[in-house]
Structure formats: C-alpha cells, structure tokens
Length: 339
Image (cartoon, rainbow, N blue to C red; front, side, top):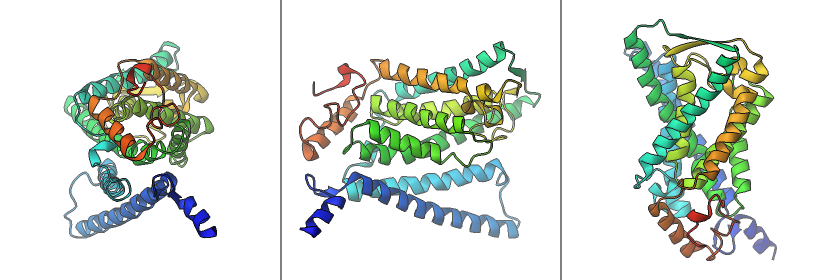
C-alpha cells in the first residue's frame, strides 16, 4: 500500500506516465547539464584558439554573447527533443515551431505589436520630456550592420527563452493543471532568472513576470510559439537596436543603434538604467498588451495544431479535459473545437 501510494507521487495513475511536474524537472536538469557541457566546450575551444591566435574576430563582447546563446539554444533543443521523444512520445514540431498556414501572420502580428508597445512607452516619455532622442552619429553601414546583427541575435535569444519557458515546461504542465497555474509557475521562473541582472528592482521583476504572462497568453491563444517568439524578439530589438535603451539591465548590446536615447525622468516611471522594463509605463503597456491578445478573435490555433491537440486528447485524456476550461484557457469561444 505504501509502495502504491508513493508510486502515485511520481506516476499519473490515469495515464500511467510520469507526472508533468517531474517531467519538467527532468527537462531542466537535462537542459542544464547539456548547457554546462556545451559552454565548457566553447570556453575550451576559445581558449585554445586564443593561445594559437586563431580566435575569430567578434568573439569578444557581443560576439561571445551570440556564441553563448547558440550553445544554449543547442542544449535546449536537444533537451526538448529527448523529452518529447521519450517522455511524451510526440513529434518535435508539436512544441510550436511548425510552419502551418498562418505561422507568418502570427510572426508579423507579434513583430508589429511589440514594436508598437515599445514605441508607445518611448513616445510617452519623449512627450513628457523624460527622454531625449537623437539620430546616431555612427556611419550608416555600422548602423545597418548593427540592426541586422541585432535582428539575428534577438531572434535567437527569444527562441531560446520561449523554448525554455513557454515550450516544454508550460505545455507539459498544461496537461495536468488548470492553465492559471502553469502560466504563473513558468512566468515566475522567467522573472527569477532575471533577478541577477544589473540594476534590477522589485518593479522590474514584477514586469518580467507580467511579460511572461503576456507571452504565455500569446501561446495559449495560438498553441504555437511563433507569436510569443516574435513578440519577444521585437520588444527587445526595438528597445535596444532602434532606441538604444537597456534590455533587462543589459547595456551596449547594440553597438550602433539607430537612435541614441538619454533618460531623465524618474526611475520608477522610465525604468532608469534597467531600461523601460523597470518602469510603471511598461507595467501598464504589458497588461494592456496581454488583454489585447486575449480579446483578438482571429488569433487562434491553426488547423494543424488543433488537429494535433485533438489527437492527444483522444489518446491520453478524457474527452472533455483539454478544452473544458480546466486544462485550456478559454480565450475565445470561437477557437474551441469541442464546444
């Protein structure tokens, strides 16, 4: 009896599979182990190349950051693939990077929406005299290359963070818990990993958690990672590569931004050296952005993703468990296939 009772701590008795919480723990342990291995290999390779004077240009500063994210991306991709294959037995594309019919629309909507949200924040600050803007004095070719490098880097960083939080962890927890809990758990973890950033404040952490909720709702509306990824990269790229502002306390990520900004307003409102994410204006805009995504009717899962979700329900869930409001967010009554 004791053995059976302890078994239910780890095994879901209805599906006879490892419970979602333990699967998420396995995922993070695997991802961290792979990341440690890859970064160790990267450090050793750069050290040896440096000793031989063969280190490629750009491996200092932002170059190292780019390479580091590439290795982290590799670790999270492998961890995701392993967990999907051996713990969930579902195809890799189901994680949300599937080129369905409307993927490009989700991507463009997210890109435009996030850019507009940052522009609203900066526009309010500029109109209130809390920030000064001027064109960069850098040569045009440096600005152009900086914008393109930022485009690539922020897409890579966003895809990595979306896979890490709104990928396997969020989607796995959604199968066993009402959606509010997976959203809060993964968004809180998203905030915690930013707690060590420079110039961080309690408000900055709250805003980071709100950003996690914003991105989680984007996933729940579309059951795809294209919308949250495009929101994520465009938010950071517009903030840093266009306006030259700090991203989560990190400065100098864009060597030649399009504009140079100097903030003079109160830190609690503008975010100060942490960037807009540390201010009340970002709080308001993130809440508004989340509500807008929630209410847009035509943001809905594609036919392909709905078909996959329906198959998973038929295989492993009771008929009503995934779309009855207990296991899936009721963002829009028109997108619910089972009602």
